[in-house]
Image (cartoon, rainbow, N blue to C red; front, side, top):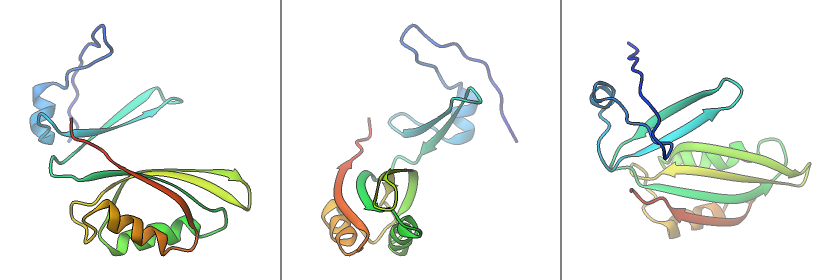
Amino acid sequence: MKLKEITKVDSKGRITIPLVIREALDVREGMNVVIIADVEKKEIVLTPLPKESKLLEVAFEIADRPGSLAEVTSELAKTGIDLVLTKCTTIKRGEVAECSIVIDISKSIIASVKELEELLARIEVVKLVKIREVAHK
């Protein structure tokens, strides 16, 4: 079932998600919401994340070769990490790519930034890792 409502954008660019939609999706105060804008379609998709999510933003470089990203995501999947957003771009073809991912570790056996850093350090294709917690607002 799809719900449709019309709402206005205020002077600061904010919108209010109508109550019927908030209730249907269990969107509550303090939850994080992923916003994906498709510029070509002129479309925005909002995806609420449970309040108990423990989100981390991970930026890293990987070897630019077939299967590198799959190797990283496979290792993350083995620990129960949920990928929320993934963006990778080739910097120098055949040599290096950079990735930025947002992950949820709330249901993972990885419980801290340190453990995640240690896991990523063991993956041969991964270089220059930076991790930050995404605070619930």
